[in-house]
Length: 280
Image (cartoon, rainbow, N blue to C red):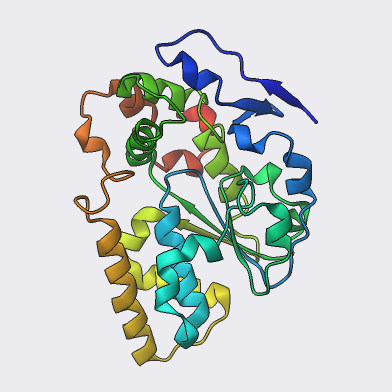
């Protein structure tokens, strides 16, 4: 078990440093400590659906859309109110790995872990994996707001300081670039569907078509029209900044943030090149 305390130079957010530990050179949240062996050995079922994202990449929206698409006409809309109870995060302490093992099939399971730390059965292609990426400039705004909203994180630094932490892999779950690149390299695997958060907003019909085909569910045209309308409502609700202030926002709110503007100027373009080294 390659665990170690994160040790970085002092910053205005010194308390934040103590919230993480390093596992195989990747900074992870403290609740992952002691759980990573169990995560790697977690028994995957062939009818599982796994949702994997870097934090603040639209996970809540993705799980709602996938739940509705996967259940088809049997979808219980009331379940969306408590959807986190039905779609747990593998590495979170609640409900815990043992409880997730006992969930009835078909399970939908979330994780923010990098590809290399996910259960070995997933590496072997045993279940479907839906990965969603979000452009880093908007993601970092959402992640910043999230850290400021959590008393446990105690983050009171500036947005510029937070951007530097993001760029230099000093936040939980490590490098955004490495996280996305790993799944991008597996995008042609039969059991992997790679989505972009922005596509749910710009081309919902296309995204839903990809999800329906990937999950192997059947919809006629009338049902697809109804599915599109319902998912559009979910997106509109998630974009209501007045009702859901935490985790919302775009990079345009911080136009002077030169650090991340320079490092992430092309959003996803680095995926089409050799990788991170050409763009950061």
